[in-house]
Length: 91
Image (cartoon, rainbow, N blue to C red):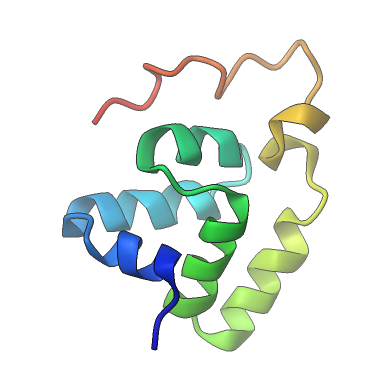
């Protein structure tokens, strides 16, 4: 039985599901941008990715994004502006 974040993800239209996974996969898109657009916080995105990716792909993705400054807005340099604008990713 899928958890609540996966159920919310499945209710999204196919194109938005694809976009959310693409944004999660990108190194420079912060989790906060995904939360703003899709209402899924970082733990929810992790759960969705765990469910959507093959196990080896999920492990590689988690290893890559864990602690990555570009994926976590709070760890970013103040000079990086990408991801701060809520209208950057239009629906």
